[in-house]
Structure formats: structure tokens, C-alpha cells
Amino acid sequence: MNEEILIKLSKRGDKKALEKLLQMNYSIVKGYLIKMTLNEEVADDITQETMLKAILNIKKYKPKAKFSTWLITIATNTYKDQLRKDKRLVYKEDKDLVDDIDVEKSILIKSEFEEIKEILKEFSYEKRMPFILKHYYDYSYKEIAEIMNCPVGTVRSRLHYCIKKIKKHMEGGSDIGKKL
Amino acid sequence: MGKSCENYKDILIDIIYEEKDFNKDIKDHLKHCDNCMKYYKELKDTKNRLNNLNTEPPIEYRKISKAFIKADEIKKKKSNIKSLFVFMLLSTIFLTMVVTLAVNGFSKEIIYFQISTYVIFPFILPFMIKKRAKKEGYDAK
Image 1 (spheres, rainbow over the protein chains, first blue to last red):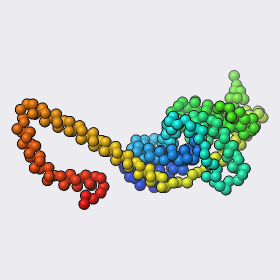
Image 2: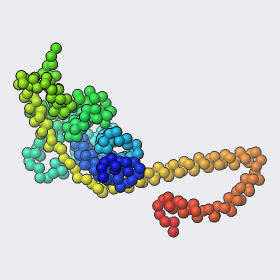
Image 3: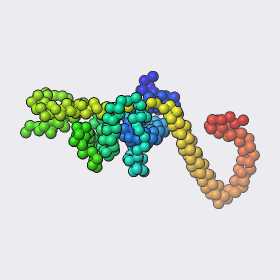
Image 4: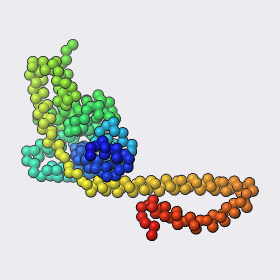
């Protein structure tokens, strides 16, 4: 059954259809939150909260955007709310994401993964968000602007800022570690 | 005034993220500018290296089911609050009517109404319980 039919059924109150829809998009939402929060435990909690909000508000969903985009918007807003409530979340770090995700990654990849994680950690979430949505999920500037509720120009400049900083860091001329 | 290399570098970021087309102007510039060509290659390399963070977590079916259970609880709670609010509203309207009628000299009629209610109520109670049980989703027996 394709997504369009599942959405129609879900909006009519079909629990099974909604469950299937959430299962289809679970990995996208959790993957996004892992990259955003850089903490699997926090990502887990926010994913759960996102699923709950999606179930409660499915009737409000308008299919003009993809279902995954709607879920990512909910996840983004939930993460922002959590940050407002608990500013310590930004710095919370308790698990090795590489070990959790793929134990068989080579040492080289692992160290690179750690490096990327360290770089991303240095960006504020407002800057990290457009980068993650663009780089890993291929959203357009316009879609990201809608998700983040900010102008397209801001999305572009934040993405450019992140790319330039990451590139500089990877080439060894890092100024990562300073407040970005 | 033509574009500076800095402008082209910004456009190259948009190009590798497919926000802009690789047009003739940029191709011509890259042909003649080693610095921008190097920048373009480095950008592509950075983009590839960043993909190492692209992990796909497994679907946790149990957690999705849990979210449904929690959503049902929240919906039930909301429904109970709504029912309580409707009950309070109807009670207030009813009480106001009774008081207004009593003040206007209809006390006798109110007493007759009360007596008939007490007589009828035991007969309609089982139906009300049955309906509620059906709504709550369990057998009344």
C-alpha cells in the first residue's frame, strides 16, 4: 500500500494504517534526531514524543508536504521545546553512537565519524539543523525554511557557514572549539 | 562588475547541494581558475566524508505501539474532561431553570417532575450502564 492511501486511511481513523505509516518513517525521524542531538538517549525520547504527537494530530496533517517532512517538523519543534526546558541537553553526552549504530565499522571510519560528531557538536542547533536537513535528507532550501520557520536566505547562509567551517576543519585549519 | 571568486565559491556550495545548475558561466570560470577548481574538488571530498554519519537506525515496533497506547490514554483523559465540562454546563442550566420556575410559582410542578423522575430513573439506568460499558469497550456483565 502506498503512502498516499495510508495517509487517507489514517486521517479517517484507521490505526493500522497510521502504525504502518509511522513504521515506514521511523528510521528517518530517529536518524535525523540522532544527528541533531548527537545523543541516542535524547533522540530516543524525542522520537517517542514525535510519534505520540503525530498520532494525536494526524487529522491536522495536510498532505501538501511529504509525511516525513511533517514528522521532521514535529521532531524539530519538539527538540526546540526540550532545549528551552532543559538547556543542558545541548551538552549531554553519554553514549558512543558509533558502537550503537554499527560495531563493525573500521577504525578509520570510526575516527572520522567521531571527528564529524565533534564538529557538529560545536554548532548551535540553529546552524546544525539546515546542514543536517540538506546534507543527509536532501531537502530544498525552501522546505528547510518551512520546517524551521525562517527565511530561505537564512537557511542558505547557515548551511554555507557550516560547510565552510567543516571543510576548514577537515583540512586541518580548524577554528572549531571556538564558539560557533 | 563580474563575480569574484568568493561569489563563485558560494555558488559552488549551492551546486554541490543541487540548489543551482552547473551553468556555462561557472564552468568557464572553473576552467580558468585553479583556485576555485581546487575548492570545488575539496567541497565534493568534504561532502563524501560527511556521509559517514549517515546511519539508519532500526525500526522499533514496540516503541511505536507504546506511543499508540499513550495516545489512547491521552485521548481518554481529554474525553473525560470534555464529558465533565458538558455535565457541569447542563447541570448549571438545569439548576437555573428549576430555581427560575420555583421563584415564579411552579413549585408544585417541580415536585411532580421530581417524583416522576424517581419512578422512571430505575428503569432507564440499566440502558445507561449498557451504553456506557459499550463506549468504554468492555462487557457490562
